[in-house]
Image 1 (tube, rainbow, N blue to C red):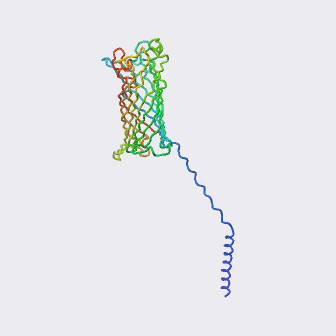
Image 2 (image 1 turned 90 degrees about the vertical axis):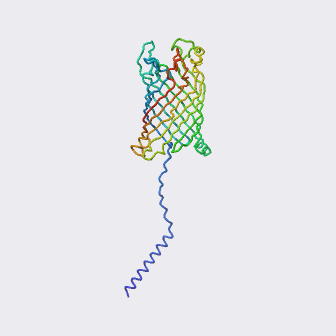
Image 3 (image 1 turned 60 degrees about the horizontal axis):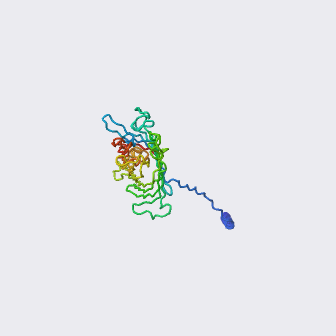
Length: 372
């Protein structure tokens, strides 16, 4: 009996304590929730694509206008091999693209450096042996996409991906006897199209503005004292009139190949530049026929390049295009706007009008590119 009373009193006491605790908890404010700090959101990278490459290539039968030699049988050799060392940068950012390429080209002895003349003769007449010419050539192109600038998709239709403003520069210099330089500014539009297998095709109509080009063969004192403005130019600098240019380039993976050999791509470019007036404006040197100094439309192209993705083939898809090996064909007619059939002393022998075979380039080339 006493045990039953003890149990009941104990249960009652526990119940009263529980009710008291519940009432007290109801009167007290709820504890503040524990705040968990969210991880910081990573900033989007400025460059959506940032691609940098070093390339070594070899041009088997390149040319340089006016550089030629006469073989023992009397025929003219107007070609020279060139080793080319290149740095290439390409990026895509929120509003467009940037492309920059600089080449250092090292010629063979048939395209000699100063002081040898293009035919290998030293200034005072004897035959000399000079190292091959070293040239530097740089090209830069930047675009601003209309879809991105105006926040629209109005300029995307079918295969047309975008229309862009485009601007850039061409810079070149060489240490040959003629010491040529090129300084151009270009501006216009670019129309970008999609090709199958993640490929693209771009075409850009541009205006070309020549800033100053140095032509030593027009400089007073090179061949004779001359009369500035009549037979020579005092400093050899020549500013050419503005002209037009159409630049195109394309790239496409050969995605139709079986997966086991899907390591190949094709690419190419074609640039067509309009006439820019006479090569010189000196009354005493103007001429007609085979001795014409008129410029001609220039075609500078690498219509086909076949690329083997060695990085993907030997190291896996993660390293696709880290190492590329390629072969190409290059065709450059009326090089630098010179008339390949008539410009005297450069494209033709001045005394006879015979072609020097140096103003049109037809050359196979091969190279290796490494991404870093």
